Image (cartoon, rainbow, N blue to C red; front, side):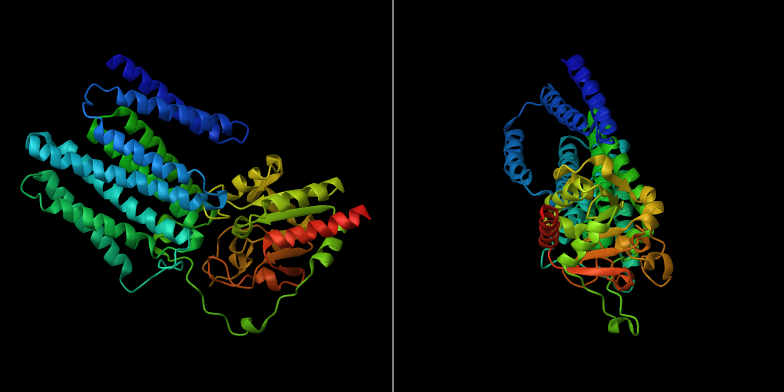
Length: 465
């Protein structure tokens, strides 16, 4: 039986690796999903066949609970995928923390000799990472879901970083004492859990919405690392491998996201990016020019090259299907239409890609920021749909801006810009967008789905006429 289980573990590991490899390309992404599902099923079944499992009661309860929670989660709209992902990370962190807690007290009662130095190091790492991931991910979920009692803007106070790091340091010191003597200092164990839970909350509250894509991938990394520790505690090689793949991929993605924002890890975690900035003197007297869908449609009819920049506003309005209609109309008229994708657009990595793929927009028309910026001066019209900070020229020119240095999509370099927004309220970074006051920029105020729908209606009427 052991040999069969080990072969199944190797097969599952291979499928996990193939899944990650295939997921990096849209053409093979579907195969990657199937491989990941197959790997997980094999992992669960082979683990269930372990001879050491003699009591199925609690396992059955957990499976039933998993279905009760998982089925509704599978039906959330794509706009809610970021918060669903964060919630999934919280479940992973909680599972790791609970397993570590259970194993500590089990081995403590069965015989302290089971609590070897290696096992105690793994347990301490597991509970700290697991529980901080649990509460941190819950806070991220609340912010993304815009839960009323969780402030969306960063909460900062004097000495915040010192307090946060002190809590973590106390937890680590307590963990070291437990590793040295797991029997004498048993009272420290629940203290470490409380500190980890508290640290998870305090880690997220100073982080603003603009950093959420990076935070989600970072929490993904923490969840993976806690799974690695759990694998060592349970002596399960598959769990170690799968957790390492999850943790490393989350870490690599976090590095890519930080690079895309020209920011460091410490800046993301402690920089409080997203605080509302006070208006500069004179800025509040400016006014943006407004255009109607009729006027915008007339301009689009004359364009030969159009770039659409999607943002979270498109996701909220579910405007991707209307954008598909607009894309079809323009391309039928011979207009070259591309979509400019910023690495941190939306609220999680790849958010815009997923939504546009849902509307079956050809993937080859989606162009990454670095590849499309050089073409922007030749673009006749750029349409910014609910994106703010990723097209703000202040990132290039204003050294006092909190987004200074962040690479942006050069929408301001296009010949004309239409910005679709509900109002002039700032985006996640909490700052005004200089693009909206530029001479060649015109605002189309309203819900993105309705505005794009009006544009489609106008273009359809003109084309039919």
